[in-house]
Image (cartoon, rainbow, N blue to C red; front, side):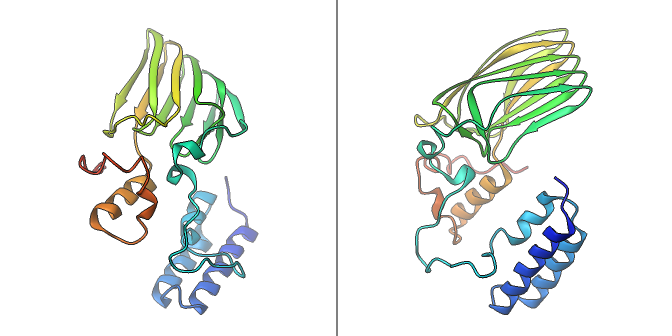
Length: 233
């Protein structure tokens, strides 16, 4: 999503408040401020204030429990939400479902002469059992899932491909939803990739190095993975 001038100014105000409170050093403030005014999208703006409170917002005391969002949540917190999307369509174009969204228990994606992206790494789930149907004709659909998700891939490719590859090693969690990915690819492809998000890989690195801020990994998803090491890419 493209960022507006008003949104850039709100981020700049948050940075000014942070440097006034001593949360940012002047050098870092100047770097972030310059990046704010050159940012073109929300994705470029959001990391600049991710670790800062909004101006005037109440700040939790040091040591207070931190509210988890996205992939920081336990699987039990990510199941049973109302669906925000139950399908996607692309014809001579593309679609994307990523970030903090809730996938319906039955989700159908169609792409013809186009492409689409379905990212479940930060997603919530309407039900513990989810079926994602991917149909593509001379197009492509990429599905990205966290390594701890229980995934079953059953699709057919004709003059094309329908399959999965595991990039990041991980053990499926017994508390995670079960996602069945089915469908049909004609002269196109549907790919399922197991991959952690950048934020998740950074939390794993911090946990291994004993850095502050890694406490959110003290749930069932963090155990049993640190011996394997983070992905180097």
